Length: 211
Image 1 (cartoon, helix red, strand yellow):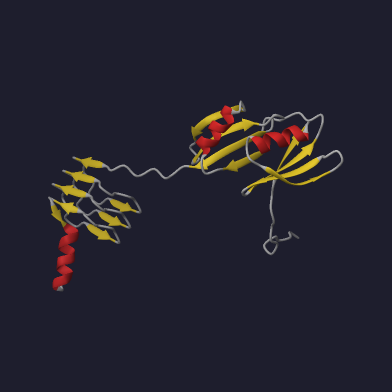
Image 2 (tube, helix red, strand yellow):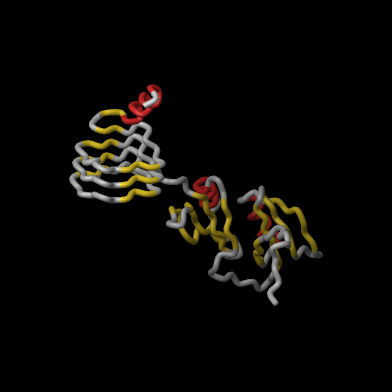
């Protein structure tokens, strides 16, 4: 029988770093990264809990520690470039250079004095959709669904029977386009123009007149 965790509330989950010299490791995380120790035990000290904002790291003394290639932790920050500059200025070893990743983070990897690797990242802002210019094409009966077509220019295009559904056509322009049988359903047409005519304005005027 498989037990369920749906009714169990999880608490904090923190990364751990092994160190050959816990005081030297603490000094690095305190002086370079701004962490503070909120708990320690042992005599001499063999364990510490470090925190900065929402980040938490546990240091454990292991005198024969040998670092392994995998990252021990992943840290999300709100200014990855600034933190990268701080670490470089402090002479910290950068394992993977700062770069925009295809998984949506701008990130780099550094190693602490014991060789423990930490992956640092910042979510990248969504890239604005570039306006398209579609010209001299045949697209009769095409379906455009759930796509952004803002500011797109359709020029000399056959759109006969095409269907636009749940699309953003704000600021789009249709020039010399076959619109016979075109259906536009649940679309943003603010600023849409055909042959220089503001369709949105015509619709609003029609509504005012009760047409």
